[in-house]
Length: 247
Image (tube, rainbow, N blue to C red):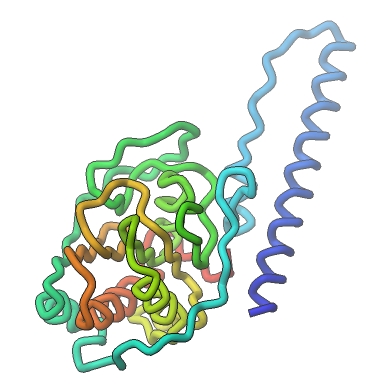
């Protein structure tokens, strides 16, 4: 756990140093232009370019911090439908629906975005992706940040506001499970995963999303665990930008 937190902090510090260096260079260029008598409109320094070149990262001011320590409460053990090729069967057994909403775009924007699917599964998004981890109720990142995380191959598990603490604790246990993924890189201790309270008024009790994919469950039950396990195994790191480093 500590190594993941240290890696996230190191990446954050590197990103800040790069941003400060870029800002200093721009200021020096502006002064030289003024001295030479040439009035130019300086180009805006695009932070997104720095983030992409470094593999991404989240802005502390826009994306709340997440924790990585999962709960340790009892949940049903994986069954035969927990594998990536059993998603249809797992979803049906749980009373859930697995869909593949159309891709809505992938442009970096600074404002709010209205997504066609609820919860969102793709679309234009903020340059700063939300970090991996567990978010406390009421501390969910803005949707434009966690849609960017989907583009990096993340799985997002979300529950409706008002969900019982026992259910949230069970989902935290599921979050921390090791999952052998179809991509070939396992998810361990919550890597490549976000867990949070839904903030888009989704019409489901529990949902899991990936870039271009959704598992929607009207209500929580014991079969939902295998449905999410199957979804996670099938779609972890199956996205346009596969970022393997912790975010």
